[in-house]
Length: 186
Image (cartoon, rainbow, N blue to C red; front, side, top):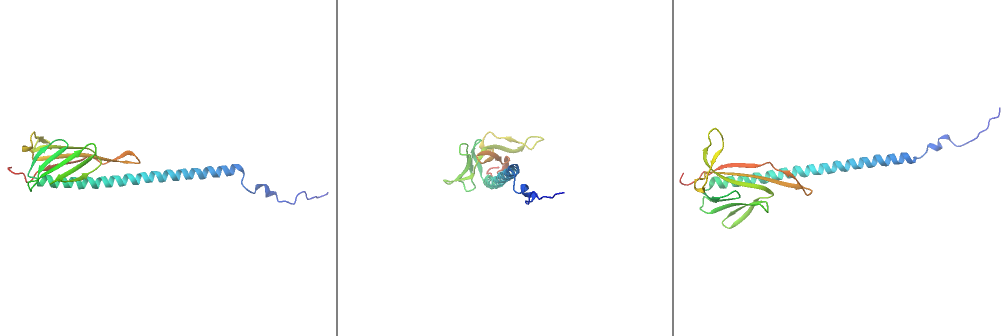
C-alpha cells in the first residue's frame, strides 16, 4: 500500500472569512437595530415634549385663574360683560378689563392703561354672568341679563399647543365660578 500526502494545507482554509450572505445578514441586523433605536429616540423626544407642554400649560392656566379669581372677588361690581370681555370696577374705583382675542389666542388684562397678556395659546374662552341664587335641585345658577344684577362670574377656557407643527396637546377645560365679595349695595 502506497501512502501519499496530497495536500499540506489545512482543511479549514475554506471556512476562514465571511461569505457574502453572512455579511448581508449582519448588515441587515445592524440596520434594523439602528432603525429601532431611532424610532425609540423619536418616541421618547415626542413624549418628553408632550409632558413639558402639559406641565407648562397647567402652570399658565393656574396662574391665570388665580389672577382672575383674585380680581373678580375684590371687584366692586361688573360694569359690562359679554362672552369675550369682562369689565370690572376694581376696589380702587378704576376699570379692570379682561379681553379675549380670538385671532391672537390670548387673554389680556388691562388696568390704568397697562395691558398684560395673562394667557396664551387659548383656543376658546367665555365669560358668563350669574346671580347668587341657585336653580332648584342643582348647583347651576340663574344667568343675569344686566351687569347691575351680576353677583357671580363664570369663566371657562381651553388651551392647546402643538408638537413638531401638529396640534396635539390640549389642557383640559379650565372653569371657575367666582363670587364678587366686595360688591357695593348688596
